[in-house]
Image 1 (cartoon, rainbow over the protein chains, first blue to last red):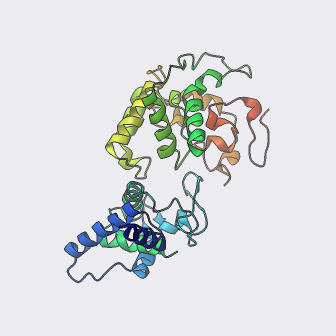
Image 2: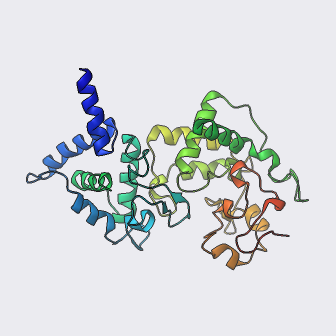
Image 3: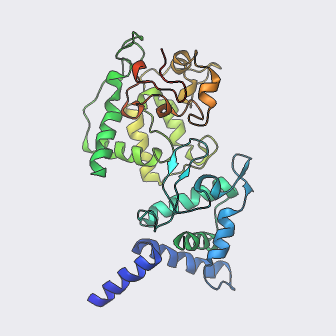
Length: 135
Length: 177
């Protein structure tokens, strides 16, 4: 039992996410399989495309996730509207990232709407999280 | 340590009203006379910390006494489209923040903007417009400031609720005198 606990901690630290975020990823995976029968796991490359591509956002202007977060996830970003500094998204650079599922859900919902004018699908959310974990 | 900082900020946030217009010969105590400090309950302190965390993630957590109740009420119920961005919150958090904002809001519920409507933006309240009427546009649009919504860019102690004239440092221009 003790080893199981240790194993969980190791797995989580390798993935750079807390237990509840890993749990959330599992839920997303289940939902993604339901949404798409050919789903074969989350993909960081697809996540990168979602993260770096430009779209006409909620404000009617061209915007990407990188507009505020920049292309280097280990570096701080800046809120494009208010100028407020955003701490790095990378869990390696910023251990607070991906440590709270409630935060993760809140920001994924908001930011998909701001950039894509719709919420992300389970697969898209999982892909983006996978990309963030690897950076 | 971070928690202590958040709490002390929250207390200053709510208590800030006492010294907002405390000097500089501004209409002392006139506009915000009603921003009297109320004793804070545990719940208030927790909600103020939540306000700091959630709203302060994107911009300064503006002192609640800058807007009347009905402005905060409308704002907190339209967070899905918050000046063009999605700022939606968990319903429980939204309620707690709305409560703290409304219980420390400006008592002047007749505040209206130039179009006679009640303002959602602090920058469109008559008092704000009056106080900033002499500021040249170029000082505000420069990248270090971006807009009037960025209080802390020039009011160095805005986050703690202090807007004294002698604390003003406008990027590239310095003091405002």
